[in-house]
Length: 111
Image (cartoon, rainbow, N blue to C red; front, side, top):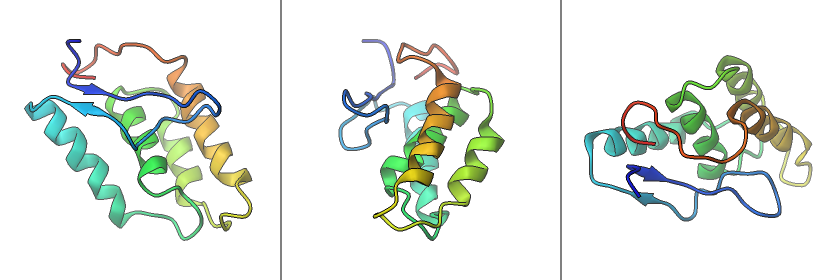
């Protein structure tokens, strides 16, 4: 596959998975990973699923999908505990709606 970064979406829930991915050693892919890692310092106080929540925003920003400011505001506003996932899945829906169905993105030479 020609992509520099390969991710997948869960079958059961419409959520991009952070646990398994493939990355080609390119400048684009290294930047993608660094951008993702920076979210470690931007985690909201509520449940954000840590790296799994952050990957949504990195993908959305990388492919320049619509509504990034709106979705990032939802992410920053996450303040509910893990026992209440309503906010988290509202944020995930914002991103997945903006991205549309899973597909090959041919944007900026890598995704």
